[in-house]
Image 1: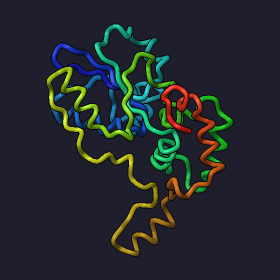
Image 2: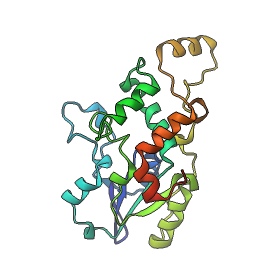
Image 3: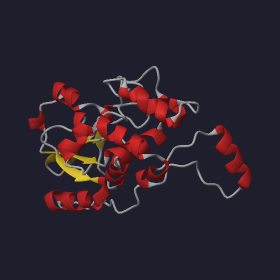
Image 4: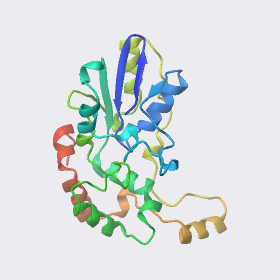
Length: 222
């Protein structure tokens, strides 16, 4: 959840994992904005990590413990449909999950845990409603990240280029390769992740049940 300043305004970006947050951070840095409370090398620092999650992925209850929200002029976030976010997070963490753990088995493991494996996967599977502070301005990934650019321009008169494609919207299959031999070995040694069209209605409904609070708070259609 990076903190940054543009002009006289102090911003808090509630980074919900797998909702385009890294793209927002890169765009800000490319525009010369300095970010604080962020660790983009978090996974590489064990056992010297600052905490049990990266600073940019802290929960809202931790945010309120650490900060007075009146410190910030603007608090904002990007959210997305929970099913698509779950698939993206599953793809991102596939090697950590283990290639022998089926999609169904992993969903079951989430269903059994109230913490959504928060510590193990850096809050990637925690509902967005537990990450986003109550008074946040909400943007939706489905609407494109350009809406953030327009908003920042309006309130700070600063141009932040967020027009590039969001990598979180790609298909969640084994990486494509021009060489058939590479495709063969990747299919054997690298775990594959499903796309939305690969999973059944029952699995989709189970994911929706897990993220009921997100559907209610952010008014996603179920």
